[in-house]
Image 1 (cartoon, rainbow, N blue to C red):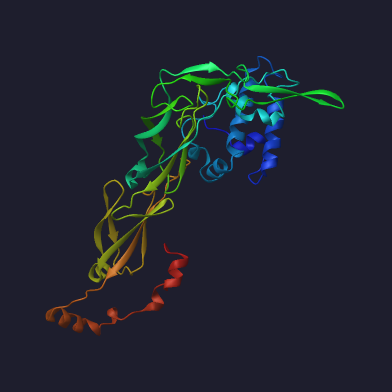
Image 2 (image 1 turned 90 degrees about the vertical axis):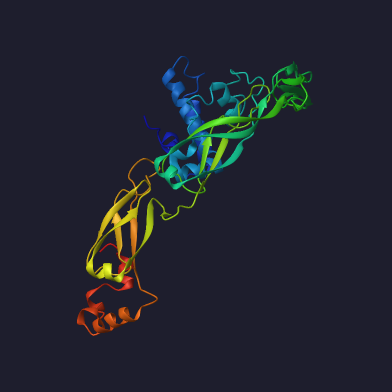
Length: 366
C-alpha cells in the first residue's frame, strides 16, 4: 500500500511556508490527539500520520529531499513503521502544543527521551546497480550504548527531567518548569562506566547495516534510514543514517536523467550502404540496423532500455548518437578509388534533402 502525500495529509500545497506547516500540523494533532480520542485506533493512526508528515516537512533538509524524490528518497524505515511511537512523538514535538503535549496538563511530560546524532556516509554505485536496484551491507562506525554502564537517577531533578522554579511576583508566586541542566532532561546520569566509554555511556563501534537501494537513484541523492544512526544516551531515540549516493562512471554509456547515451562510430561505407551493428546495453548487448544513407548526427532510440524512474513509473531510453567516421589516412589505391567516385552525383552533398543541424536539435528523432 503506497503512502499518502505528506502535503495532502496536512491539507497543504507544495509551496506552503514553515509557519503554515506548523499551524496545519498543530490543527491535525489536536483533532486526533489520543487524549481527545481515547481507545480510537483510527484517530491514533491519523495522529501518527500527521506527525510523520510534519517530521519531514518541518525539517528544511528533509523537505527538500522529499520534494525532489518523494517517499523513495526518505529511506526504507518509515516513521510509523517501527520508527517513533507515541512517546517519541510527544518528546520530539511536544512544544507544538505549547506545553507537555496534553490538554490542560493531562499528559505529564516526564523525562525527555534524547535523540542520537545523525550519521552521513557516501555509497558509490555502478550503473548496473542503479538500473537494477541493489541490496548492500555497509560497515559504519557509530556510537552505541555500551555494556556495563550503570545509570543513576539525576540528583538535580530527582529523575523528573525537569526542574521547577518558584518566582514571587506582584501577582503572587509563579511556578515554571524547565529542562534539567544536569541531565539534559533524561532524568538520569551515568554512574559507572567501563574504560573507553564516554560520559554519556556511549562507545564507538563498527556496525554492519543492511540497506536496500531502489532502482533509479542518482548522483548526489540522499537516502534517509531512520533509527540507523548514532544511539542516544540512556536508550533514547537513535539518530538517522543518511546515505549520499555517488555514481561510478560507466565505460561506454553516459547518463542524462533517466536516459542513457551511447556514441556509435560507423564508417561512411556502412552509413551509405547500411549495416547491422552491435551496441552495449546496461546488461548485455543489442543488434540494431543502420539504414542506408544514415547521416552523421542521427539519433536512434532503444525504448525502455534506460534507467527506471525512481517512483516506479516508466523507464528511460538508450539514445544512440550515430557518428560517421572519416578516414584520416588513405593508401594510394584507396585515394584513386575515391577520386573516381568524387564526381558521382550520389557523392555530392544535397543538404536540401536532409535536415539541418538546428532542425535535428529541435527534433532529433524525426
